[in-house]
Image 1 (cartoon, rainbow, N blue to C red):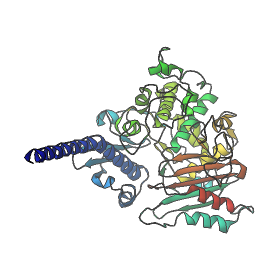
Image 2: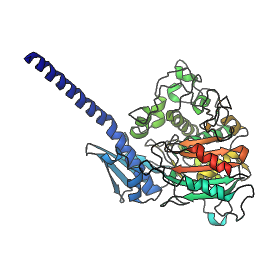
Image 3: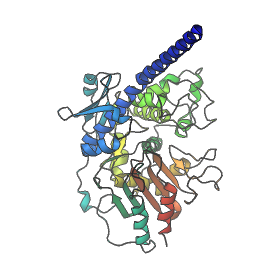
Image 4: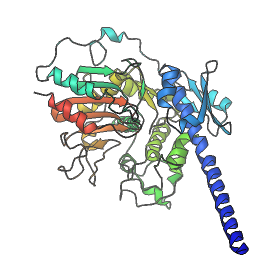
Length: 460
């Protein structure tokens, strides 16, 4: 009997040690990511978007895991420091014109001493310039749209049916035939509030690659110019820019945000995100299979930097894309090494996200100027294979089988930029529509299909 008791006690002790060890390991790998995420989100929201601190704490950092952290704002040096039980500290710093960067691997002093040749923002009075280059709107409303139905469709997604699991729509903008016909904002937000696009930034990166192609500076169908893959004997040497655009690189990269993974390590712990992604080994033959990876997008951003050189890289997105579209609010944030985080970190107003959608609706032409190469949008929205359609850093409503639609009530020709927490730009050529929805949907409970159905019902 005593022997049995000893065995039970020893077994329980072993289980306790294993449990404690597992908890320590979980904290060891998770706390730096939680602190980094919270610091980054808070810093961008306060210093770049100019939002209310209480609102950010009550909404953006309101989840159970985020409440474990203590996030302190320092107005003196425009930073936010986050800590988890005082065990782990991470700092995010804001730099004017660059947005927020997490202090990762490099010292804060070294990051702050970096020099960037930024573009000079044109002086324009947007309120005096007609949409879309400005914000002056025409008074007429299209006869083809039932305004009451459209307003009702928009109003519905601002109503919280479940206060425990809120949808938190923050902004909606609807364009029809290029005209802004409807918009709405949640309390505390307005047409001037910059909001995170998260993975909609990937589509921005795809457009920047297209501009390089138009300028004759990049060939997307040959081996990608990645230094780590330069050796012809390296199996990654055969990866093309097209493979990266289509999320078919074959790299062994895990995109999982529920735990520590390649994606979370890259975004919240690495100074050179593109370099980290490029260092990953090969898993599948390039071009053979689809796997959605933020790593691919950051490799693309790094390719843009290496193609242009630092003297023109930092002004490139602004001079060649944003300012030509009237996207004067846009801020594309670099990582600690100085490369734009092309997978995730861009802020802009809802109107500016809509302007970008309008560029794709109009086949890469804006304000009578061809911004993207002729045929680029057509190539960008051509599915390679699979039921879930994907093109050049942009999602499609259908894959090769046009009868199977991700959004069943939307037309098959719809394509869209999609980001974390249900940021989305829907582009529907057959209806001449661009629809932007931005929010903080943390429980994956925003029903985009019903919203699209209701908006489409407003077309007479």
